[in-house]
Length: 192
Image (cartoon, rainbow, N blue to C red; front, side, top):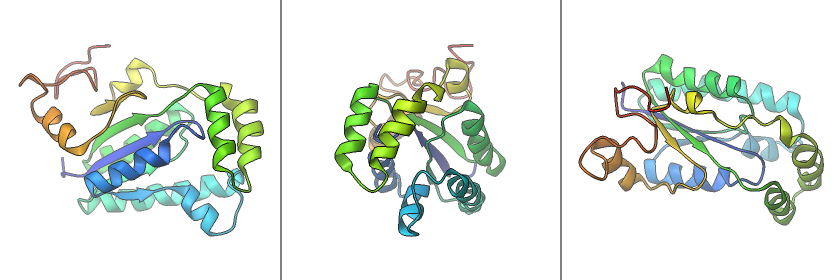
């Protein structure tokens, strides 16, 4: 391992991905890779998926270079499918970095409320077309997917770098922590 970590933050619109990503960026001193920032900055619609997917591919190549240099990255894509999340995880594997999977979630009506409340030119399209029209296509992580990551932070789990550092090294009881990943470091999966 090279000391770098790829933090994959994912969930539906309004789930709190950006809030969590910013916490990690600040606490872990990581580089934030978010297509939304670039898309809005370039004056492109958040629901221009052809552009979004091309940009995300470029960002992952860049993320691999950052990891190779020994710095950590926070990848904040929607990452609706397991296949997409695995593709992102493989970037870290190739570069010898550790991986953390951060899944953020809330009830659908709350997600719609949050998206509409934060506003913006694409808020109604995100609420109506994406959340109300397509949320059933979102793949939540399964136990076997979670077990592929070095650490998992579930929707209701808080994240704090000092706590994570202690937990990752010894666990709260002085033994390896298996709550977050379902496995002790280097050990078999609890789910498997």
